[in-house]
Image (cartoon, rainbow, N blue to C red; front, side):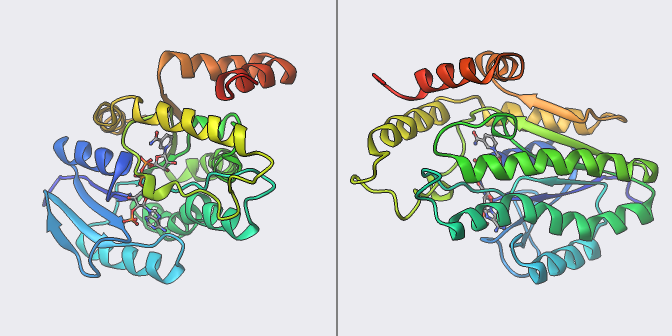
Length: 273
Ligand SMILES: NC(=O)c1ccc[n+]([C@@H]2O[C@H](COP(=O)([O-])OP(=O)(O)OC[C@H]3O[C@@H](n4cnc5c(N)ncnc54)[C@H](OP(=O)(O)O)[C@@H]3O)[C@@H](O)[C@H]2O)c1
């Protein structure tokens, strides 16, 4: 009987999901990778099994889990599928909020509802949920994304408490900026325009966000850190993978008052305010 461990990875066609899947593959895991751009039937490519998955669609989630389970049950599930919509709170539509929350947060809920019974039946497993530094603090013009990541943080705390007796461990990964994300998954809200009352601050902030991501940390290093951590018998509940200044930002946000936080963040994101 094979002793190779199996991990299912969502959002594994690009960015941090792809880098994490590759690092786990290189570490000896059998990787079953899911994303919308993969084929309907399992296909072995680049040492991983790729299979179509849309985390916003319950039927697609069920089909992915059934087909993946026929190949190998999950010892671990890593959930990276995500997107954001950039825009002011005022001009981001409810539908845009819904899309982001449906993908980032409810997508995880759907996957976990399918995977938890399988892990319980096997006597345990590891669930990794990709949050973000934005799961800990808000920044301007990313409210839909920030809200979805805050939801993941709260949900993960509840989940970890409930599944502990079944030998299931939960880990939140909180990445800072990494140079891997595709602009395809970062659309501007449809209503944002040059006539927006927020136009100047929006332009400054989105330029800064883009700069920080394109000059962000190494996505391969993040993948390797997650692979090393998943090899451990006991995994931490939180794993923040960020630059020193982003660690500092989280610390400042937690321990300083709202007024100082607001001043620091506005100074950072908005030029000549
Ligand atoms: N990059 C960063 O700096 C950063 C920082 C903090 C947190 N994160 C988090 O890390 C994760 C990956 O982000 P990224 O920026 O590295 O990658 P990305 O390039 O934005 O890739 C997003 C991935 O999610 C998949 N996806 C999107 N909608 C999906 C859906 N409905 N069903 C299934 N898969 C879906 C995409 O594949 P398909 O289009 O093929 O479905 C793609 O593989 C996200 O959770 C993000 O919030 C990233």
